[in-house]
Length: 213
Image 1 (tube, rainbow, N blue to C red):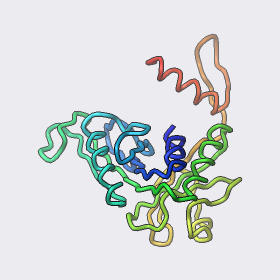
Image 2 (image 1 turned 90 degrees about the horizontal axis):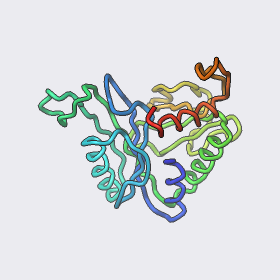
Image 3 (image 1 turned 180 degrees about the vertical axis):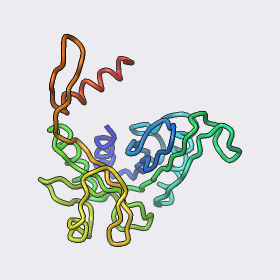
């Protein structure tokens, strides 16, 4: 898990860059919210699709750690585009690079809560400031923790959003990612329909992916 690796890095005082797809148009290797974590020396966790795009992002992330900077970059994945990377997917994607200092105590708390909420299948939301000079990096919200990682809790809380999308709050643009929602799904096959929890469905999805289904 990306946030377990991020927590491990923070415990070591190691700076990282979190690479997140913030826009996906057409056919792309991964979709909005997909993440990858990089240290200055190597890839730590996650994938944004592999191939030339991931390589370019890895190299850019390493440089940004040295410079202690955030960045955004767009990729054109059309094979016939002269300014593209020669990919064959055909779509476009935009990637956010967030520099995360290892000594930031708020990031440690956010990672701990992310891991806990996923384990217990508790609803939560991540807010990504898309302004590269924002004083916030990662922002976490759940009904049990309230706001973590932002200096502007009052302003944001009055306009809290609950669906994955981009939102404008006080002249700032955020990508909001909905996480670990409670609910029920119906799985068909194997002798009939079965209603199960989102948590169980998530575990089944992981098993199917591992089996190549």
